[in-house]
Length: 411
Ligand SMILES: Cc1cc2nc3c(=O)[nH]c(=O)nc-3n(C[C@H](O)[C@H](O)[C@H](O)COP(=O)(O)OP(=O)(O)OC[C@H]3O[C@@H](n4cnc5c(N)ncnc54)[C@H](O)[C@@H]3O)c2cc1C
Picture 1 (cartoon, protein in one colour):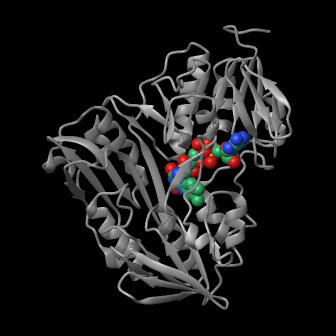
Picture 2 (cartoon, helix red, strand yellow; picture 1 turned 180 degrees about the horizontal axis):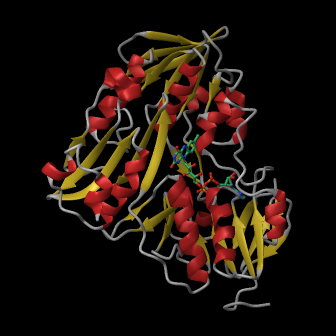
Picture 3 (tube, helix red, strand yellow; picture 1 turned 180 degrees about the vertical axis):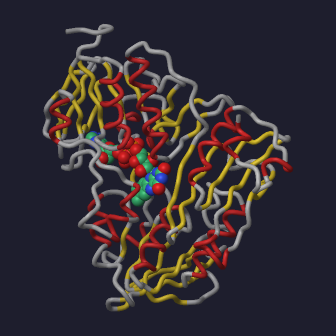
């Protein structure tokens, strides 16, 4: 049966965007064939718990997005452990690792990214880890044991979440960050300082503006020499210094790629029948530039854009971008523009009393609320989303007054 001239949709990558695309296609009444091709042997799973609950509570943590039964119910053919090695864009087929050829009418590339490598650390051969998939996370469970010296390279979200998990397991933790701030790419200074204070109060030795000159193995220890000459000795090193989008298939197929796969606002690549979504895609934004967003929400959002476009359904106005991180028992949520010119605090920042520290930050540019952060205040997030969507003017006397209910102010 053909719908909109489509009989078969092939999705490459059984991760967040791939799984979400299946749900979105069926929700938008696509009844044709869906073939999900994954290079991993697992059912589609979520990655956020990999740095948190999979390490801390491996037995009780469920990360599966779609069960075998659900995939069957949705009429999906799931090819596992047999990734796509080539796209034949003119013939509209993909070639799998085992040589099999699969034809498509529409193709979604949802191949995510791979950990950016540090070859001098990889060359040590042992005691060095990265974190991107389930096996990586499971490998860390026996490594993060009480009393072990763990050096984390990179003070971004993954580094700080791992530091938090490692401290929960009583490891001796050092974080080495090249930049002057932790989470410097995704958080304003005021929050970055709070995050840093939390890590230090929890006993993590965070080194900012610190570069590594050398690394070597000395028996079972990794020896890291810092630029200033200081030597750090570790039982294990985990590095999280960003990802490289898995875009090689698109490069080889001659699609327009600039580090990531360039897509328009419908998530279409330079080939009209090939789409990309999630960490691998860089999308044309209202500002006229392409931007890649590495979040769980963005993967789901772009999967929805793809599904609606192939089904000829209009896209709803998107919400401002949102993501979260959980560190040291504190929940942080971020929405909108983290590069706002000023940040205003609603509530009191009490770094020393983290459990009681609950506050909201308003990001303001030209008098308008453009960004928001909640710290242990998740219930306020939907109000911030609304204020940003409405381009609400920031009024300090209203929004910073704790006696005023944000919910009522939003109306
Ligand atoms: C440890 C960790 C913690 C995170 N925590 C958070 C968080 O707290 N909040 C948040 O918002 N985001 C978080 N993220 C980010 C979020 O998980 C990603 O943005 C999201 O998973 C991206 O989805 P995706 O579908 O693009 O890629 P993925 O979920 O990575 O899926 C891509 C899939 O494609 C497969 N693949 C690659 N190449 C091929 C091929 N040639 N053929 C077949 N299959 C292929 C990959 O193996 C993978 O299974 C975290 C990520 C990690 C790694």
